[in-house]
Length: 205
Image (cartoon, rainbow, N blue to C red; front, side, top):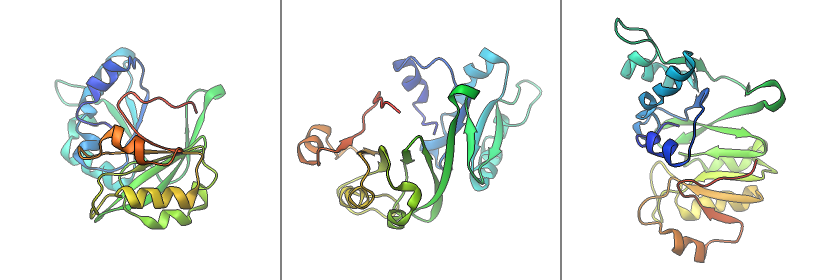
């Protein structure tokens, strides 16, 4: 996903190379930072591969058409790849296979991605995911957890912990945390195998 502050995140974490980006859904907090990726197009004079579902692709081509279609003054920055099934990214010796899953995110659908025994499900309130075999035996479950209170389109703390308890990954990482979910407080209350995410967090895949 490409958050509005993605440039700051890339600079802070010294990320100097991007060839592809995976988008979960069309909301602005996932897509408003796409234009900030243009230095990677300049660096290689090559379109950046963007992977997402057909609904998000259509929305982006309508709302940010200049990213995909050349204009008089600017080249297209992205090549749209519609996700329908598993796909691989990376060079031959280090390819990573991504399996998309479709989940409910309030009134819309969102994509989760499963790769290297890791699942990334950033925006979701779909408790039925506990029944998905592809989410069993994970090393990492990175899961939406917005608030303490119940929310119409996101997991809250108790729901995220329920999903973690049902799927039993080795480690669960709570992401999308709202301002009222204090890191130190969560660390003191969460089970040992559950960790609140933070900017710059790195995991060994």
